Image 1: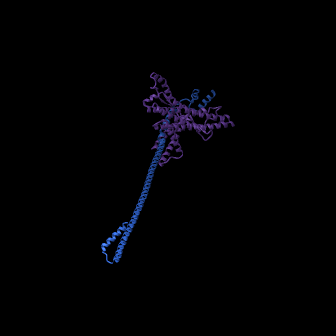
Image 2 (image 1 turned 45 degrees about the horizontal axis):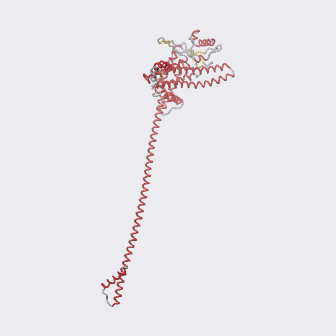
Image 3 (image 1 turned 60 degrees about the horizontal axis):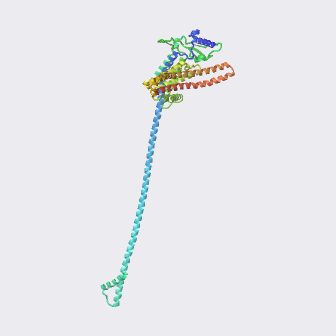
Length: 192
Length: 315
């Protein structure tokens, strides 16, 4: 214990000519836990100056640059978000428009189909009616022709019968009164 | 304008050292004295403060001993204040100048990059990552709301301690943070910051951090608990910076003692067996590199936590 201490003292004395090489002062060599007021003062001075310097010339600009970059990124992100929302809105609008157009087309098609159906039915109905009418007309005219032919035939038969009967009797029968009698007879026949 | 004030700040730091040359007398550099007899304590001079520094020299033994000047002590009242530069004072200056210079370059790189509208590359970006990590992950979450005002102090503490720790690992360097005076002063600054933060955050409620008065206790118990707990609160207040100072000091000192002891063993064995302490000293040195970062980080983290605690106190 003694030897290293004196060696230390020697070293301290050799290293620091400012110190007198007396035993007492050598023993006052700085120990591990000795507070040193000058060093503490220097620590405060250096630290405070350093803090001011760093705050103003280093951390300030650096953090400002970082904040600027963050702002730029936030802005870019907000802009992107806005653009995306706008794009989504546009897409939705487009989709709605397409949907509307498709609905309209469907409606038109359905409408057209309904119209066509209706028209077809109408035409069909009309055709059927016309056909029926035609048939009806034809039947009527046939009926009329038939009646006319029967009437003609009947008149002819009356004339023939009167002529035949006149020849047979040898005298000319009164046309009007006889004719009426024959016709009455024929009518009684036709009634059967 | 910023550059000019910067130069002024640097000049102030440099010229603070100028009287060393003006004084002339005690500041001579010389070759170390040769041939000490017997065994010499290499550890104590290395880890303690001293009034000389070693600087690299191109001839054997490759270093010069420079005796630092001795200034007349200032008298502040009855107090004798010896502001003579010592080894650790010089390391403080060196660390501050290196850190400030480096950081200013980083800041300028950022200003240039911002003008370009981009992020800086390489070194400045790495420093920025460190700053942002310390600020966003360590300081702001722990300090609490509106903690921006504490960022410069805590960032400075982190980088200054880190620089001083690393300078202690450089050859010819010395660890100022291995000196209890330095760590105690840094802890004192944290203590003051914490107390001021408490005063500002709590107002009169700040007294609650010193005097224990619990209204939820029965009336009889209140004065009793006041008498018992108030000293505990006060001691707790002082323990925190004390622990900060001791932790940093002890970590730095212990690491260096281990490395120096292992290096001493290399010469003590003086043979093939020296390989073992050589290897171990390298490993411990790498560990010290890690510890240099770790201790700076812990100091900053705990300072942030203490500030946050007192600001949150009795809310």
